[in-house]
Image 1 (cartoon, rainbow, N blue to C red):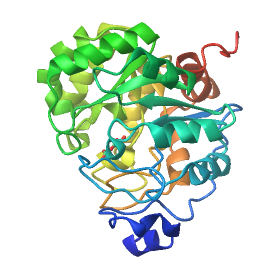
Image 2: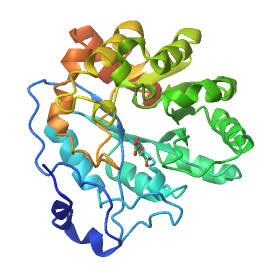
Image 3: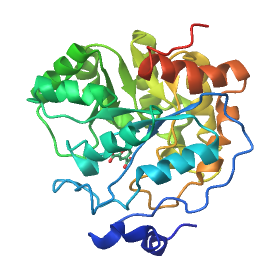
Image 4: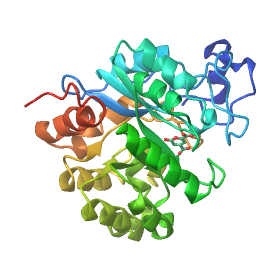
Length: 311
Ligand SMILES: O=C(O)c1cc(C(=O)O)oc(=O)c1
């Protein structure tokens, strides 16, 4: 069990404020499941190091240092080939740490940014050249302050100009209010962490029905079958979440993505073993074809369309 004091051993990045949640698992197991060639961890983050990259003064949590070197070591340890690095709220709209990690990845990472509504065209071009292919809208009140919908609409228009998609993170019980706004956004929309259904209600959960309603309504909606550790009631190995991931992969095989969510910000109940998260994949994607779509074809189509294998 990773403890807060483990964070102390995570190098000197903690010269800043102490982190207020668990540090990532120090020795993740090697998964029994071997991901297919070219597998993509399509949702992960880098934090700091604090000494080099400032955390946002508006942040709602203070992260541990989680640098690119450790993300890429985990990628190799788990048997993945590429990463999609998602800007985390603790860095606000300062995408420097994410861009730096992409630059260090030797072409094996792309990014999702958080930008201001008045971001210049020059900055958008710099982000695109730096590997950004999407923007993120975070609607969780515990993570960000409320932004006017007009701001999101402006950002969404800028993203559409760049050919980028929009990643949205919301609680499924807020979707009743959010859905009209989300369906008004242009382009491809990717829903984070299964849309956060209430696992305790089982597959009939009304929030999960609303999320599936979005997926059924338009092919431009995609969804990440990630973060069982955030959603579980039962705890590891997250057997209560498997039916949710399995249903999403079965019903939307060409529009699902998977990610570790390393370094797992804001986890307090426990810290998942990333190797165990990988070993959940065969339970939610039970065939080699579904695994290849989930881990290779779908993320490549969205993040490396210029390289997409023409199979
Ligand atoms: O549930 C969370 O706390 C969380 C936070 C962030 C972030 O701060 O960006 O990203 C995630 O994917 C999940």
